[in-house]
Image (cartoon, rainbow, N blue to C red; front, side, top):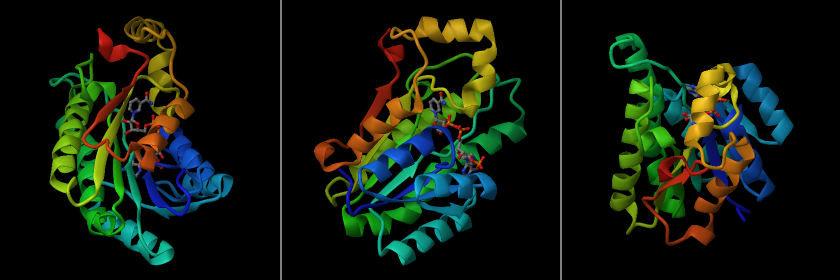
Length: 242
Ligand code: NAP
């Protein structure tokens, strides 16, 4: 249970982040969701019963302001979920440099910024960082040069940051989902041959629902996981077993 905890979930307005925010709220946490689009953010916040702060995680100043506002309003911070992310497909050649930098700024730098800014508060609360990586942080995949590179970096950032802060009481873990039904994967999974490829890679033989990602996420930031740090947990229907 997460009663009395204050959590920030970046990218909490939709998809996996929204499911994580809903699960945390169910378990008693006060949640602040953060994303770029005001309308969607406010709508989701009203639906879930939480706060929304408009924030682009690729801006260090915006992330500072998000954490500051949360701490001012809630008196501290216990959990940071670095979930915000985008998907850009392509090989190392077909990905434009502009797209490469954009993806790194959001999917990698956003995780680093959030962790850096939140850390003083998490040290005070003996709190938790949970990064949302991907199976493509653990193995390679087709047409995912920028995405898999960023997620691979998030996986090792998780390990190395866990080492730095373990003794001081802050745990740092990540989850590595396989394919989940969200806006991000919608158009890709509409392509029949890609859908077949995904099912062939997934021994459980289906796409995950966001809620199936949210429950293990809540476990990892709970007291029940008090001896777990530096772990990158696949939640992938078996994708990375073979
Ligand atoms: P989604 O449905 O597209 O939702 C993405 C969320 O992130 C939205 O709230 C979006 O809102 C927000 N966001 C995007 N860029 C942002 C930025 N620069 N700053 C702040 N918020 C931003 O995506 P999803 O599938 O739930 O993915 C969530 C995370 O899970 C990502 O890190 C993704 O890489 C990872 N993941 C997804 C899958 C999957 O199969 N879906 C699998 C493995 C890992 P705005 O656009 O309004 O900012």
